Length: 419
Image (cartoon, rainbow, N blue to C red; front, side, top):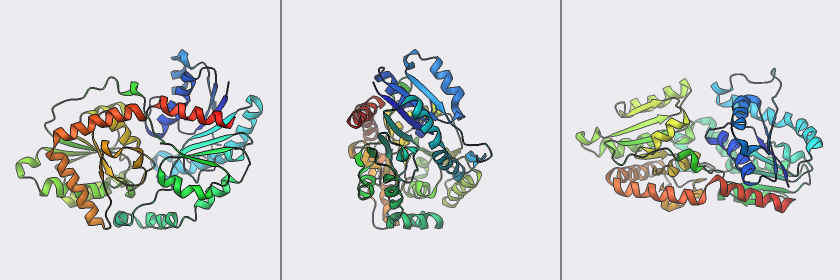
């Protein structure tokens, strides 16, 4: 029997992205290994939802939630209205929770500490300061943005990217790894992360493992329409400059407005979902107006995840034009629904087989990269049957390779090597 403590700062039943990871990993682990005791360290933010979900599921008798919140006077109360707010609260939580973790360890005597969410190589996880075996990740953040994309980056991002590419901040990761001599396994979400972090791992074991997975039950009741009158593209995500919305809109104009006849132009549309902040909405819609795409683009600031999944299942193409990533949950969910996806062949997307996505190779220049993206979009518009076949291949591959059951088995195998 193992006593496993998972740190899941982001944890919410029924959620997607990081919050979904923080819920799905420990609950899947608890069901799959009922002889183990699973403890989850998180905030009280979703305590009511968590306790309700536990009360309705008798298969989770061996899971226990430990709640810790930073002092109210230190908490940045407007975190959801600011990109920085959530990060500030997260970093404070990681530093301050260490004392609480030590106290809990004296009571429960954990065999493993697994830092699950959020994950970056700069994260000051309590696991670096414990005397018990430590698993971190899968972590990301070390991927670099290709120079061809820098035209779309804001000055502050360019500055940070310059620092990232020089690699000086990787020394932070090395410093964390020298705090204690406990056995450590650092899981890296993509090849670029692994290659860049390996020289700074000290004596930690670094391995490659995707950061994302899914539960088939989440998609079981979502039906897919076979006929679509409109070529509908969906982007779901934030509006950060490196997410690539601008280059996507430019490519869509070239591929679909400039190349198609006036009659055909009425048969395509773009939905931008999840851009919540007013300042970002103004910026993105400014690009839309500048490109003359007003009649084709709809902005949807927020919808429930269940509604988003239905929309993805019935659109023509999921668009994820990020310049780098540690592995996109948005792409994963689209693939799991049989929705074909387009993305750049950039950091993080090596998680997915080349055969199941429309991957656009990054060229030396911005204009050539944008043209390659537009050509792929035009191909997708012109070849609806081949596009659907790509979606079917994606669904089959994801169901075999990226389920939570498989991910949890991988984690458990690693735990056993450390205990």
